[in-house]
Image (cartoon, rainbow, N blue to C red):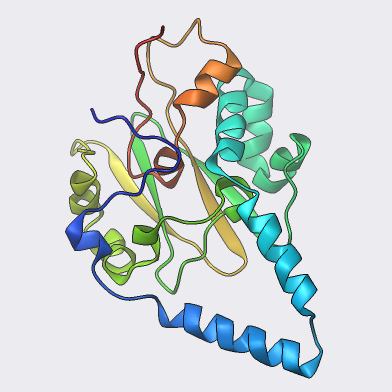
Length: 211
């Protein structure tokens, strides 16, 4: 298994081919128009960007680790993802809903946004480049097992692979399976194992050697 850190962007050629989504260009044009019309100010835009870049996969990792050690929190997380995140002080900047999907030995979840690049930014920060590119957005739905294999994740035939398509108002977060051999790990140690890619669903959580 390869090790993955929070800031690693995969460079699988079939996934990263393509150009910036047209939706990103439209968003910038809309921003300029709204500023020109006085609907929002440039300071509002700056504050929003500052809020976004302050978020990172470490926020999501805290959520996953808490769910692994606290079954009552896990139940609340799976029932209402946004409310459970807010319990840990993670705020949301809009009205989007967060649905948390649990991986099990029978089900593997994979997240995509086929329309553009909708993504659970309050808990994962900025999306990786490959998530925004057309090859991933198209192929994750058509051939998810092949896409997973390119990330080094091979799912057995008896496991159901479920692809969830994010929208402007509904975002998804994968609750990955807790790896074996971590029974004695602290919550912080568990959080250190959880990466952005595991919470998108392209790779499983792996255990590094403890020092």
